Length: 97
Image 1: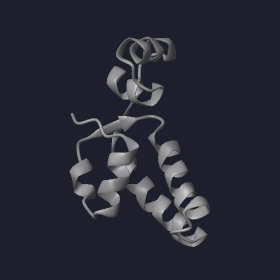
Image 2: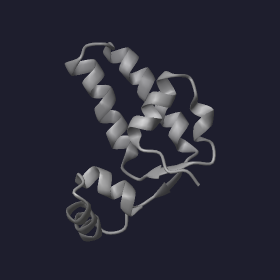
Image 3: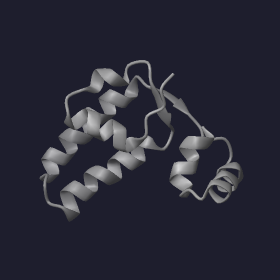
Image 4: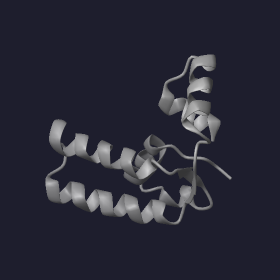
């Protein structure tokens, strides 16, 4: 099973390639990461209006609803991997999963 992070999900969504996510999984925090990415497009970059952001988030939610969710073990385990491998906590959470 393929594990997708939120940036991969967002890119596939923008490219119209959501079928690539079928049978895949993501971390349980991906929806919040996707929400933050859309917020950035609306509020910071101003590349989307609020209604467009809402629509994008609904589409992303529909895409990820069918994906299996995994938890990245425990937070201390993620911290240990992050420190050992020199990764961000975010990246280590995917590696740990």
